[in-house]
Image 1 (tube, rainbow, N blue to C red):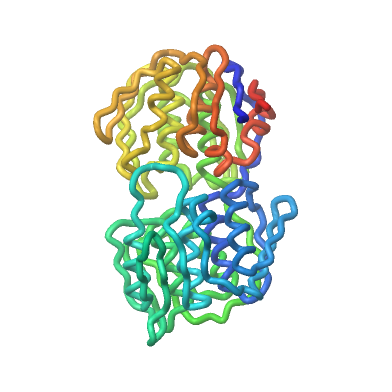
Image 2: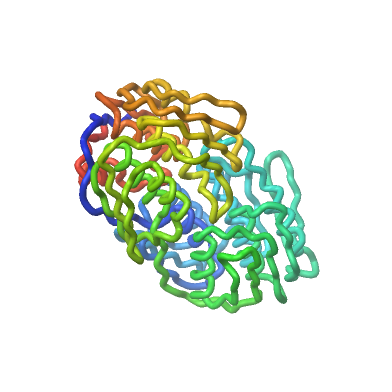
Length: 419
């Protein structure tokens, strides 16, 4: 089994181009199913979740090819609407195929999705939204059997009780195959929703309102082939910036919009980092120990992203001062805490709250990645720690980071993958 070996304490410096956003590219690839033709997706990151998505598309009858960071999807010969359990289990985001298959073929058969174990992430909101648009969904022994009702899919108003990103995306894709207008009220506002809207508009869909709490879709098509470039990954950018804050140094990340990371950048500034932004780049300078900051409460966008919670916590754990974290999105997103404690971190848990008291500097240890962002957090902590750290179970990290070790070495980190 391979692992990262990291010798901490080396300041980072340099410029790094950020790869395409994992949380954008997966629904965009699923949306290619709407098009009876060829779509070309640029800035597509080489991640294990993307590879699993391409495998699903191929199984459904699509042609899916990659050349560097460009992926070509031809869904002209889409012939299946069922996805086997072993592919669904590879990632949580696979449920996004539900809406796209319903819109294109009027039927879909999926098992419950897999992925990181972050506590319950029920898909009740997805199913309620699709049922309101005219889908009949039966649950049998862990399988979802979905089909459009006899009257077909009909647009209407959908009110989401919470701004779920996945439910918003699934409703948008299903609405593209509906007759009439669909209005999603209480929609998620994340930048990745806006990116999905951009792709849907590129293929000819009439979608407006993404980035606000009300998204409107005029369904029915027709849809045509298009080329599209995926936005930069704001969570990957946050990871490299927090890694620089932990190890000290001066790093610039490019290809990412600073306004998608406002909440994270505000925390880094408050902790003592100098942050400068331009339209598609962010630079960070950190010369001294990080200080404690105001309570960090995860929330739907534009609040502090849950995906960056563990990453920022890892940086602050090796600083000075105390910071309270409150996780409001997932029940089990503190699984990285025990691993950070093995490095000497002082973190006290009480339900959804975590009090982090900086210890000045962490020390190396042998650690296990618990999930995607938890694994990245361990790498961040190791960059600033004294001594050598091993981070195991890299399969989690590969789900969302392309060439993490190579990129960090380019910035001056002492990190290598063994074997």
